Image (tube, rainbow, N blue to C red; front, top):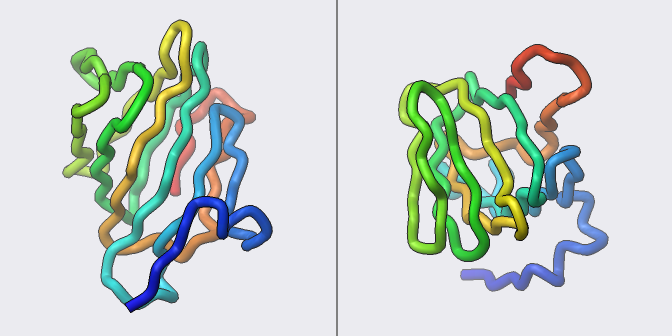
Length: 126
C-alpha cells in the first residue's frame, strides 16, 4: 500500500502544463496498477481539441464546470462522469467563470510523460 497527497507532486516531474490547464499524474504505468489516475485542472474560458488514441479515459468532475463536445454537448458539473470509450475525439471546454477539476482515469495507464500539443489547429493526440 502507498499513500500520496496532491502536494507531494510539486517537484515530482509528474505535473504537466497543457495550455488549457494542468495534469498531476497521480498513478502511472510505473506504479503497476494497470490503470492511471490524474488530477486534471481545466482553465475557465479554454477549449481544447483532444484525442487519446492509446488509452480509454473516464473523467469525474469534482468541482467547477465545463463542457465536453463531440457530436453532442455534455455539461460537466460536480458529480458528472464522462467516458471516452472509443478513443473519442472531443473538445474539452473550461467553464465560463471557473476552472473545473477532474479525476481522470486511464486504461491502460499513462507512462506519465505524455503531453498534449495545442499549438496547431490539428487534434492533439496521445
